[in-house]
Image (cartoon, rainbow, N blue to C red; front, side, top):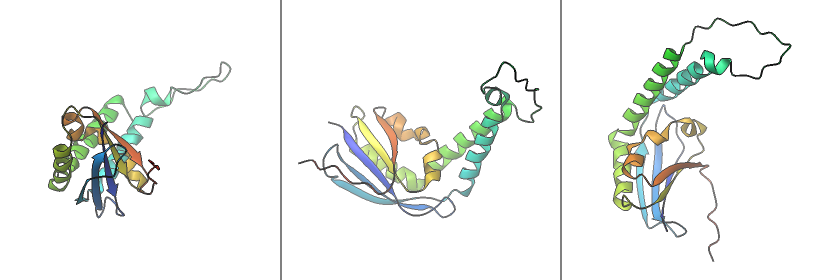
Length: 166
């Protein structure tokens, strides 16, 4: 049986940061380790995400991938976006996310998780938050997932009920 890690992210935002409680235990059992920490502020991160999303949806490949009707002629549109804009925006969001995940506060949380999970163990890592903006971010870039390759991020609302195990 694998491990279950819950990052219970409290009220906050990227302007101010978030309190977080990390709960670690065996899958299907009560957590046996709890750590308190913080996700630091990074107000630019959400704008980087929006810029990436805008560049993605405005690349000619994506814009022209819609359903075609044989009798409907749609003239080609001029766009100020290119594949290069998209790649640049993708690189920016990746760099900003990695920089945020490499802050001392998040490294401290990561190290607690790394200490609790052996490299060969499987682990479900639940990011539990009411903040939908955090769900949009590329958490797969966290080096935790490279260092523990049998783990994966999943998302949940902050309020959930544990199943009755009896």
